[in-house]
Length: 318
Image 1 (cartoon, rainbow, N blue to C red):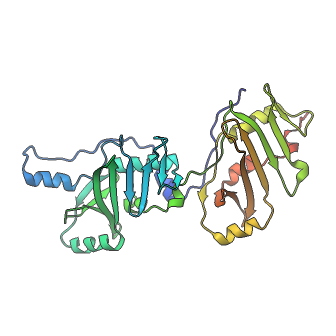
Image 2: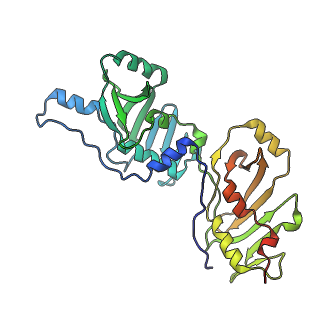
Image 3: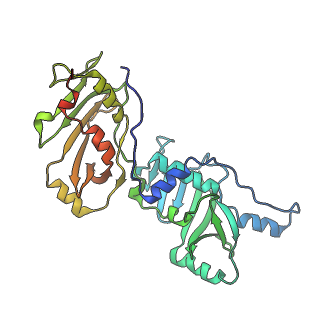
């Protein structure tokens, strides 16, 4: 099989997802603080109080952000789990490491607002804990106060303003995880060497439904005696990784979609999976949504326009 391996474009991230994705391309540098050459106990204390960045993420096995726990999968070291419930999106965890390696201290808290900032830790503080195996290598709290993010070590009474050089964002808000935002958004996935078949059904227009099979040598659409193979080869790469934009927590909308017929139903067979991958796309409120594993996701209209092809779209043209 000779298919292109281009990756499906994905748009429409929430603001937090956009920030994380932007930061994932930043060059990661170790953080070094300016320290006088003398090695007094007070200077060591200052160093410990300002040590928030991670020099290296190798060997990290667990990250606790408030009540949420990100842990390395015991069966697959490349996967991270949220609260031992679901696999975390790879882009999200990579971007989080980028943020945590780029944290720098801007300045100590001003004495005039020190008490207010310490109170803010009680009001909106999030505790951050980083583990390598059973060893805790970082433990501090972050909070926001009047537009700035502050951090303070567990045994310290001196908060510091922290930031990411070159970016204006509230680090505390990045650490305030809503689990569903971090769930892997991959809906369908195949490769040129593992694709077996794809069924695209239109419940409201069955005449335009079609089945696409790989015969061992080429691709065939069962419903067409002669299909345009160039169009097929241009179409299939979009199924290398079909992703939802973001999870939506709206039980009322989800229940209403279950009561109507979907716009389209995709059934993908890949030799790596025993079960058929299935995806239902719905239209509501002038947007596209998908129901996937009993969860609701927003779906890109640009991607929908690409993959919602009908049987007629693959017919030979003179």
